[in-house]
Image 1 (tube, rainbow, N blue to C red):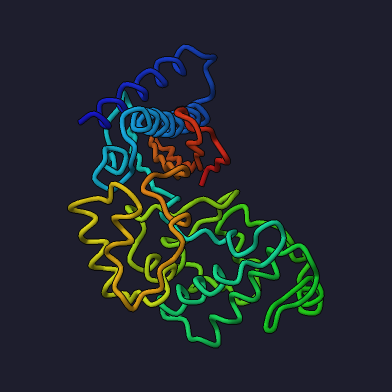
Image 2 (cartoon, rainbow, N blue to C red):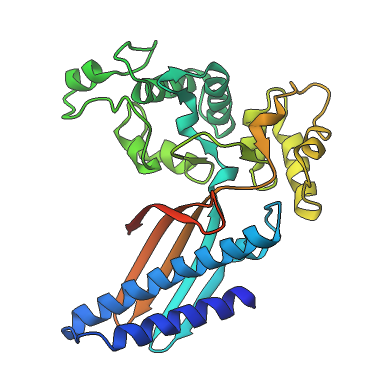
Amino acid sequence: MLTLALMVEIASLVVADYGSAMELMIGRQDQGQSRWLARAAVDWGRNVLAEDKRTSQTDHLGEIWATKVAPTAVEDGEVAGEIVDYSGLFNLNGLVANGIVVPDQVESYKRLLRIIGISSGEADGLAAALVDWLDDDEKREANGAESTWYAEHGKRYRAANGPLMDIDELGLVRGYNEDVIDRLRSLVAALPESVPLNVNTASPEVLSAVVAGLSIDDARAIAARCLVSPNANVGSFLDQLPKMATMPPASRFSVSSRYFLVGGRAKYGQAVTRMQVLLDRKSIWPEIVWQKIL
């Protein structure tokens, strides 16, 4: 109820403020109101996450921020919103650090690709192509693709040789078709820097990928227990790993989160707006990394 009440309050204020502004033509006014309402959903997310930071040392899927707000009537419109923990996803930009390949992260990514049904050979090629896209040189990995490959295949762009800005950028990388990207979409993120993985919100697929020797079934069991009893610290998670799993450094994991994606959907009249905003909660008040209207 707290999230719903806050959403309605913020959205109502936004509509009131917008109503006092200069009138627009009818169609544009609906679109403008719709966008303002979508931004209200983002403001709701920032408020919820700031309050969570003030009152909790851990982040898990049983907290208020993880509750979706269903479409809710506000004045003459409708607004909905949700928050996704991006610190619980596999960070694709972590395959390369300071322009240099991180081998164990690459191996984790290959495991993730195999977990979602990609063959070993194709997984190797996809990982190599992404490494070439991210690293800061033009030396081609085996089965990879640097700028010369894209030129030879009629592409009018070069390898970025830098971090991904967004998951949709994968569509430019060799081998990443719509099917592959759709399989990855709920499991990976493109974060601006490396951060520990939140084991309280990570999916079984991601847990199995980042911990060598952790089967998907064991990862599902760990994730299920976490829903009932979230980990208070990283040690609690590590204690649950089976003996056959390779014990990773504790520094790779966390029980709190820094990056979140807030999604807002608003309708006003005939206009509908969907907005996504990546937030960095480095301090109490989350800062906007990027935003886009879909």
